[in-house]
Image (tube, rainbow, N blue to C red; front, side, top):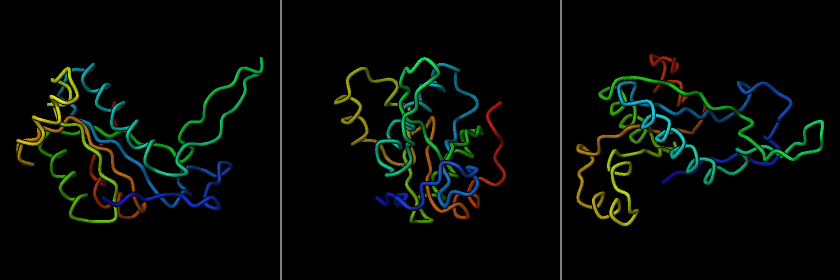
Length: 154
């Protein structure tokens, strides 16, 4: 698995997100129930934030001095599409190479025990994953080529 990262000198929190070398998108199946959609986006985002060095910005304090943990400084675009286009985008990202691809198979949402999910995953072919969402991080032009015709989640 390729894991892109920001080097310390690339972390420019004063610049627009479009200036970042890496782009992060999450694509979700627009036809699944809202709760399942939000869960899938949250889960792939948590995994992405844990893996991509330099993605999370520094913490900040509000006017009362209360600390707020850092958030992704380079932004994250949430896109929605059909299940078929989601599967196609995932496949293109995997074939492209050099991209971090994190998916949320439906079985991860239907199993209430993580080991049960892993057991089911081990017997599921890639064609049968039924992915609810996919997170993609990589060079901006590579990610743009994959998602160029997908729409923002509305």
